[in-house]
Length: 177
Image (cartoon, rainbow, N blue to C red; front, top):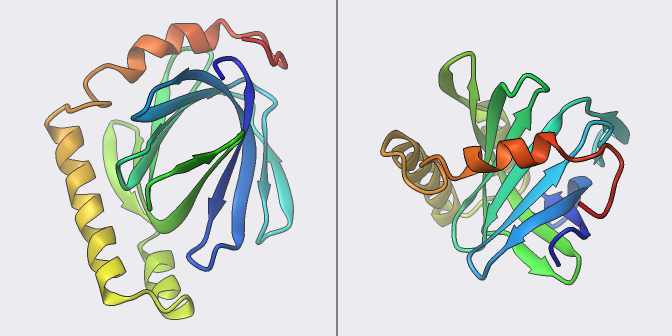
């Protein structure tokens, strides 16, 4: 599957599409999927009925056995920002990777990690009737992710950084990286 295009779908708890985009598979193992993208990629935001175009490179990490995803926005300068979704473990079916977004996100910008979308998490607990077990799992997953980062555990041990040069060399608009 390496080098092929893949559709990525983030869904809400009721399985409705939240947003979707395409990516290029860099690496796939039985434990994770690593996806990249070039400037000009588009993201379809289903709830807002909008399409957004991004002008930077991206590197995305999807573990099949964990409650998070990692997205790196990579500028041409090599500067990166991290965006980690707390979610149910991603599932790969054919050429579609999907996950249930549980609202809470952990973002690294300007030298600091910050939890965002707490308000969305609280709203969606009511809207989607999150079971108490799911609320507890989400909070625990966020805590475990923060610990993983602090302890520089995989993939925050430099693993993702090794792919940044490869991503920056990708030709814009090519499917066969």
